[in-house]
Amino acid sequence: MCPFSFLSLFQENSIIFNMALLQTIKNKIMAFADIFKNSNDYNEKTIIGFISFAVMIVVMLADLITGWMGKDLVVNEFIYNSFLFVTLGSFGIAGLEKFADRK
Image (tube, rainbow, N blue to C red):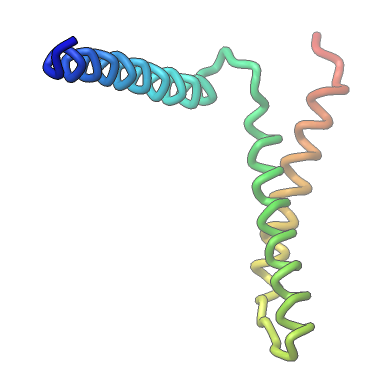
């Protein structure tokens, strides 16, 4: 087997791999775009509520860690309350939609 044929075989496999990778990336992007369509399986309110809750948890963990280190992490109350209201509102609306009578 000559080295040129090995090189061409490697290049062909590399091209196939790159095409498969691009197709996978395209499918992931299209799947993300499906979230914003009206006919999907995702509840956007729940996603926003979870993200808001996760931000609240991260900030509170950062506050605990900085407090343990002896430093004060200043978090404005209205910012925390904003995330709290978004979280409660998102989960509250999603919960009402789940148990509401759909007539």
